Length: 192
Image 1: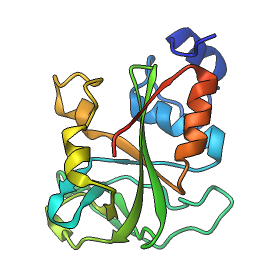
Image 2 (image 1 turned 180 degrees about the vertical axis):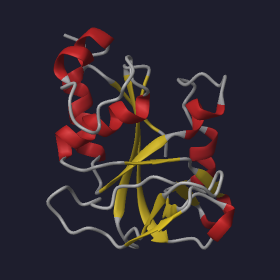
Image 3 (image 1 turned 120 degrees about the vertical axis):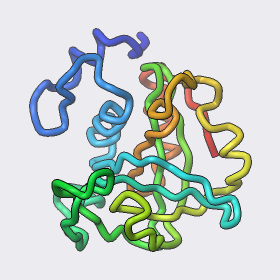
Image 4 (image 1 turned 30 degrees about the vertical axis):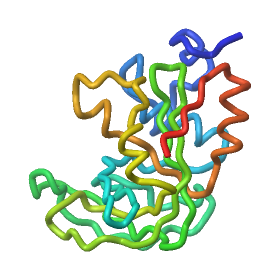
């Protein structure tokens, strides 16, 4: 049985709690967060990745991040409450992510494909008011190849949001995510 249609996701995922999307079908980042949250017990950080080819890295940034990236029972990361970067109004958290932390970057695309890459946080950039509040620079195997393969031809290139959003999770879950994808009948595409 393949688990790639909306009727399956609607039956299996509980429609309760703070992480359930308000609309159906939900967008890929919340589904990716739910999938990894249930499978690996880790919250995700939705990011708008930028490539830094000079450092062979990806910069992950967004104004919303989990403060307990190791899991809900673990220690809260230090954070600062600031304004939202887009309009300098409201509130956003700037979370101090852990340098040296292995991460998995993922996106469930088209309900049938899991985009994956393994990375490692190497620095926290100092963009201050030039970017989203929570940021980290992550080393990748080959940033130029990753950029060329971004979306792997699977994602429609009709709007920026489709290409942008990925979800970062603490830990290298690539092999376990491949196993999970096989059980669920999902294709796996390694982006990096």
